[in-house]
Image (cartoon, rainbow, N blue to C red; front, side):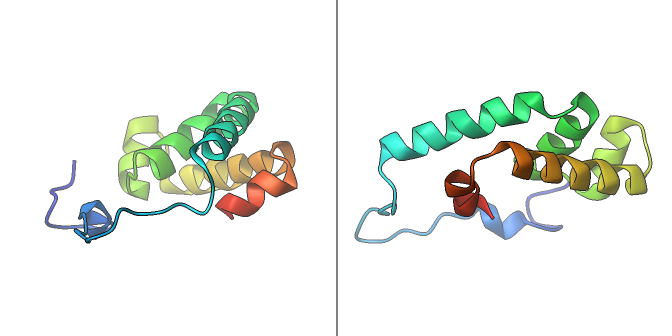
Length: 101
C-alpha cells in the first residue's frame, strides 16, 4: 500500500474546514436513490470488470496495485475497467449517469 504522504490522490483525503457546512445540490433522499441505482447496476456488471472498478475507483488503487490484487497485467486492468464503465453507462438511466460523468 502506498503511504498517505506520497502517490497519486493523497491530497483527496484532506478535509477543508469552513464556517458553513457543505451543501449538496441534491437532497439526501435523491443521493440515496442514486446510490441504490448505481449499486444495482454495478451488481449486473461482470465480476472481473466489477472488481477492476471497485479497486480502481472505490478503493482508489493505482493501476499497478489493482493489477497485483487481481493477479493480472496493467493492460488487463485498463481494459476491464473501461468495459465495466461502458456497461455501467448502459445500465444507469441518463438522469442518474449525468451526476457521475
